[in-house]
Amino acid sequence: MIEFRTMQATDIDAVMQVEKKAYAYPWSKGIFADCMRVGYDCIVAIEEEQMVAHAVLSVAAGESHILNLTVAQERQGEGIGTQLLQYLIDTARVRAAKTILLEARPSNRAAIHLYESAGFNEIGCRKAYYPAPDGKEDALLFALQL
Image (cartoon, rainbow, N blue to C red; front, side):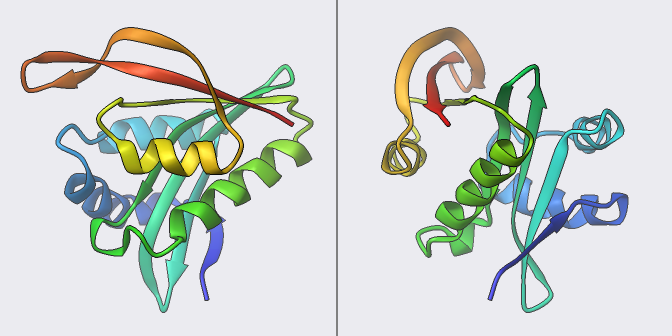
């Protein structure tokens, strides 16, 4: 059974292990520390004492933004992302958000499928948003009305 809890400073090393295996351009320790410092909802998913996923959600002025949602590479495809995404949606609702926004790389078909399965709709594109081997990759912008 997966347990979701608030990320602690002591979790950052484990978070970074998941992050570095999952992405060619991972977030830094400093970014996670800053997100915790400013009070974003930083969540870790634990199963059998192992970190299996993490996420960062900001909520302000009735709008929320999923800034990061990462499932351990070796655990992808098991439904962990679906559970974590639902946890974030529930958290946004509790915090009185009316909308959730997020970005995804067009090349990340699994993430796009996850978001569309949860009811997110593509609403735009941010040009040259993500770093990529050949320069920059666009980001598809998705929204879910709560």
